Amino acid sequence: MIVETRDLIVQKRSYKIPKKRILFLLQFLRNSKNPWRIKNYKQMQKPLVLVFMSKPEITKINFQHRKKNKATDVLSFESDEETLGELLVCPWVIRRQAPRFGHSYVEELTFMILHGILHLLGYDHETSPSDKKKMFVLQKKIFEAFQECSRASNGDNFSARPAGIRPLK
Image (cartoon, rainbow, N blue to C red; front, side, top):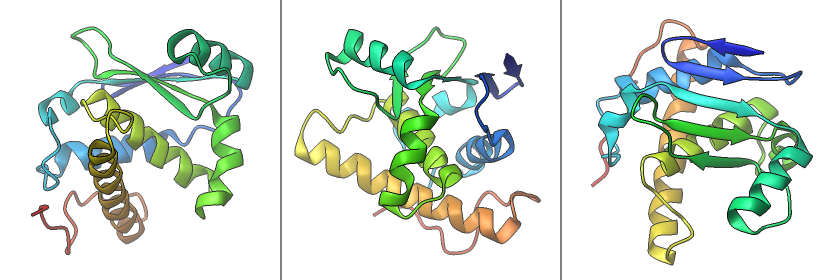
C-alpha cells in the first residue's frame, strides 16, 4: 500500500505508522527557519519517500549496499531531483532498540527518521569521529526541540519555533 501526500510518500505493509507524527516532524524541520544551521537545508522542501520493510528485506539490502549481514533500523538512499531521498525503515529493529534508549516505539521511529533525513542532507557518522560527533549532537538537539514542540502542541496547532530554541553557536 502506498500513502502519498505533497510532503511524504509512504510504502507500508502491516506496520503501525504514525503518519501524523512523521508529517509533523517534516513540518517542524521545514518551518523552523533552520536554527541549527543544517547543511543543504533547502532540500528539505522536497517530499520524503519512506519504505517500511521486514527484517529479512532490510538485512538483504544492508548486505548488498553496506556488506553488513544484519538487520538495521534505517538506510538512506539519495533519489532523483524530485524527492529528498528514500529512507528504508525496519519497524522490527526500531521496536527492539527503543527501550535501550528510553524511547517508545513512536519516539524511536521519529528519531531514526530524523537520523535518515540528516544522512540525506549530507551528514555521515561513519566518516570520522568529528563528523560522528557533529551529526549526533545535531540530531539530539533537533530531536529534543521537536519533542518539546510536540508536547507543547500535542501534535496539533503546530508552532515551528517554540520558546527556548536558539541557533547553535
